[in-house]
Image 1 (tube, helix red, strand yellow):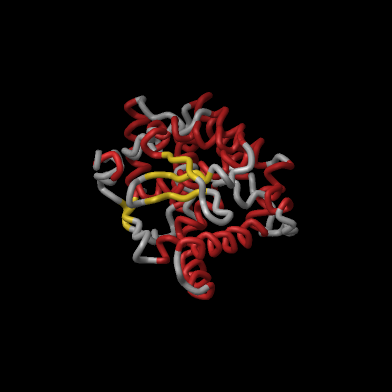
Image 2 (cartoon, rainbow over the protein chains, first blue to last red):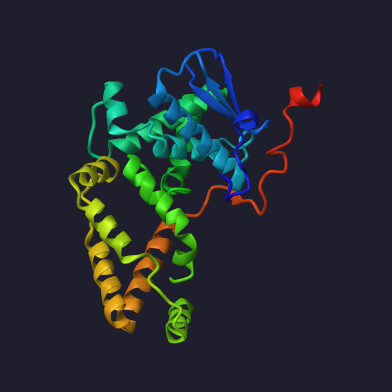
Length: 174
Length: 115
């Protein structure tokens, strides 16, 4: 975030609030603030995942002109990335949800959760949300910025950070 | 010959080129790629087994360059990494990238401004 020009200040860019329903958090692009739903976040692991999810939205907002409120395809794109890259759709989390699947199930989870996230914040039909996800899925699922890979576990995240620190050497020698 | 390869050769002549990654990074990526954990993750995401051979080829090229400053090893590494970069960028983006971060990223929150 800092490298992209959006240094995160906990006091300014995070807010802990009570939320309606079972929403865990959100990113408010109009105030550049991440909301963490203190009444719905269960434990540290859940908190880490929600923070990562919302930071991906914040990262997209920082690096791109995301039309959050006027183009549902843009919203869909960021939700696909957040579901894929935050751990939302890890095998373990899906098993906990009693969603049993292995072969390419990650993509199924990402599509489904992206639709749910869109419906939580937009008054549109499930069909419209699904179409938006389908339209942009190929592009957005394969956009792994800023990690360059899906950080399944800590070692993947460590390697992603290592690559980020090595970026000057990398791009000046290819 | 691509521009980046000629630039790389110029850098090699000037003595300033080095492999894009330290050789131990290629080894680490190869070992992660062929680990049982990664095979499972890859199957879960892509529905197939990963192909780890390029990491091993790159490791060999890296070591060859370190030992003998081989131009062929350099060319092989550059081509391999360019292929990786192109693969990551092959899909056009849904949105337009910014030239500058949002101007209001650090502005006071509305409730702060009203005080």
